[in-house]
Each structure stands twice: as structure tokens, then as C-alpha cells.
Image: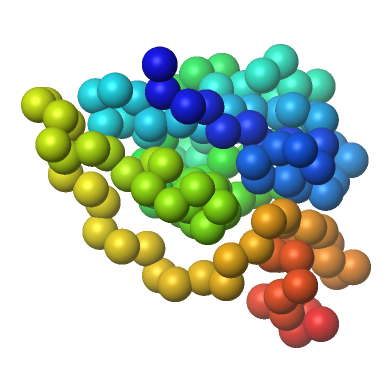
Length: 139
């Protein structure tokens, strides 16, 4: 059974998002045995939405790609940011095992980002990595 990583407001989540619109345990993300990246809502109060090619779709359980975005409550994050946050704490956790028959090759490396344990909401309203300068307001 693949390891599932939690996303939510609770500090114990693998990806902590400090925003009141995000449920304590909002969603889960994991690498399926076939190499596909899966995301599932965990019964959140404000829902999870997949944003792909400019279209919004309510998400309960779906395959996602690094280029996709997800909206958790009122917070929008790229799947690449979720992958980076998890990989910074659990290297290789969301990379397919290419030695396994039928597994997909690993994705190309993502841009280097500062390792952080949590994503937080800046005073300006943007979401940023804890301890990093906000890309929106530069604070």
C-alpha cells in the first residue's frame, strides 16, 4: 500500500497550510503503484478543486499532474509546490520506482525551492513557505 501524505491546517500534516478555510486534514496525496500521482479530498468543509488548463473541477479523488493547481478552501497551490513540500521532508516519496515493471519514468527535476515544513498565509494574503520572502509583497 503506497504511503499517503496529508495536507491540511493541522501541524502534524505532511503539508501544513495555515489558513482557516483549510480543514485540519483536508486532502491526501500519494504515488499510486502504477506511477500516477493521486489526490483525494478527505471530507473537507470547503472542498478541494482541481484547476487544469484554466478549468475548475470539484475533486474527490483524481490523478493529478505537476502542472495542475489545486484549491483547498480558498488557498490555491500548484501540485508542483505540494510535491516539493513533501519531497523536502521525504526524499523520493513521490517519485516512481523505475525498477518496478510498468512504472513510469521519474518526472524531470522540479525547480529548486527552499525546503520548508509548512506553507503559511502572508499578511498580504498570498501563500508562501514559512521563513521565506513573500513573492507577492516581498515581505
